[in-house]
Image (cartoon, rainbow, N blue to C red; front, side, top):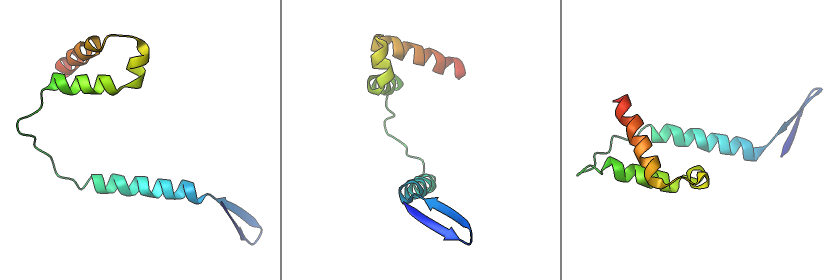
Length: 81
């Protein structure tokens, strides 16, 4: 934490906040410079959704079966296509 004073105005700055924000923006900018990654062979969509459902903490807390989450996700994905 740093305190700045200019004439009669005092400003307080948090180095932690500004450095986190700076590195977040830097990461976003650098991520945008990545090119498209083509996977050969493409991974099965059902397996990718299973991994996402298994990693989701809120889904685990809901008590639903993972297969239900996969089927619901596939349903909405197919409806959007």
